[in-house]
Amino acid sequence: MDRGIGARPAATALERGILYRPLPSQMLFHQTGARFKGFSGPVGSGKSQALCHEAIRLAYVNAGRQGLIGAPTYSMLRDATQASLFEILSLNKLPFEFSKAENVLTFEDTGSRILFRSLDDPERLRGTNLAWFGVDELTYATEDAWIRLEGRIRDPKAQRLCGFAVWTPKGYDWVYRRFIKEKIDGYEVIQAKPFENRHLLEQIPDYYDRLRKSYDPKFFQQEVLGEYVATGACRAYHAFDRQVHLMQTVYDPMKPLYWSMDFNYDPMASVIAQRLRGGEIAVLDEIVLSRASTADACEEFARRYGKHQGGVKVYWDATGNAMQSSSGKSNHDAVMEYLRKAEVRNVYHSAAKVNPPVADRVREVNGCFLNADGERRMVIDPRCGELIADLEEVAMDESGRIDKLRDKRRSHVSDALGYLVVGLMNPRRPNGERGQPL
Image 1: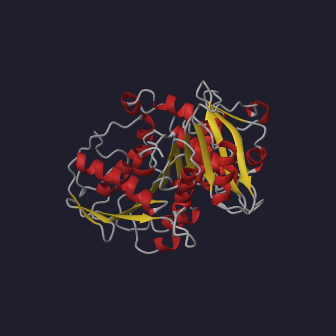
Image 2: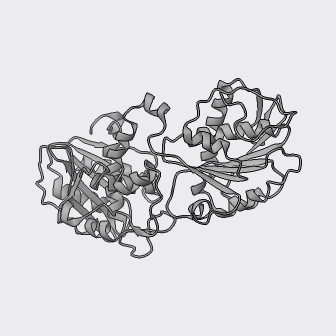
Image 3: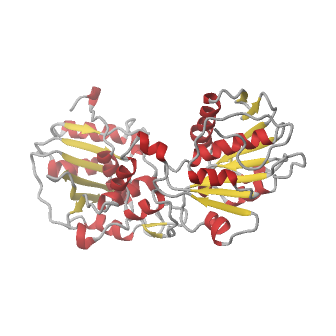
């Protein structure tokens, strides 16, 4: 039970019992009396629970006053933060009203209000006095947003003024500087330990083992161990090593063939791969054409692999699903129509509606080259010169995006590789016309 952990509530505040078994790090977070406090922890460390319980506690401590919960984007606020809070309130039968139009929650027994706000535009955060605020995933928000919220903690009738946040480390960014490195007066941070969440491990014992196999060592260190590591501008595909991952491959006409495309005019880029006996991905070939159309790429694929007997599965850039004004059909439609007319046998496609986030795609590729268990699950044939150049030269900028301005030829063929890796590691049911092979 959590009965007012931390600062003592006012005499007029209503005390309620909450079903909550805080972990050691969560308990320390709730108990600290700092004006501004943070909870830094790896995935699965209970950050969202800590955020929501602290918000509820402060709403009851500051009966009749107003607080705010923010998240970097509205979708994150709605789908993650609010969903967790509403679940806790419902589980504990705490009476509240929620105005969807105003995005405001009101506790019926205290009159306390919680404003829900996206932090993507800091200027919108000016205005009403607050007793408290809490921010989810602070490392994805800007420092300006945090500073605006700091300035709003000024309700003279509040019993406990407090600003708090939870986050997963994201390198030596402004959050690290403000909460850890510079140790600003009035700030305190609790750093959760990895594997501390007994509730999670009771339900999913192999949770962290699965992540170890999916994440590359650097990302595992950050996301699972909760450590601060350098993540500035650097090679995107840092796990690739030509001394380890280049290998002469042997094309097998009887095994499934995977063709992954990035729809771009200059260059039009794609990669061709198969699985090795141990399940590793072997990138056999690339098709990189300057000033080329989708039809040009299909023609070249059919010339090289049109007689393949083992079936072909096509992966692609989801933006290719948009209709082309000149032809009235999408790039996806054009590919499947061309392969059908070319009599390429047993063709399937992976019909993702949207591309995976760039950071996730890059992480999956790095994890295939080397995961935290030391496993290497992908090799590249030396003939794939453009792909190798991408893997060694494509960089990420300070914001975690791929730098496409340095060299306009770079990144397209490695994008195609990313669609392939995500598709193979997160398989979807293959389908062609009417869900059947062509």
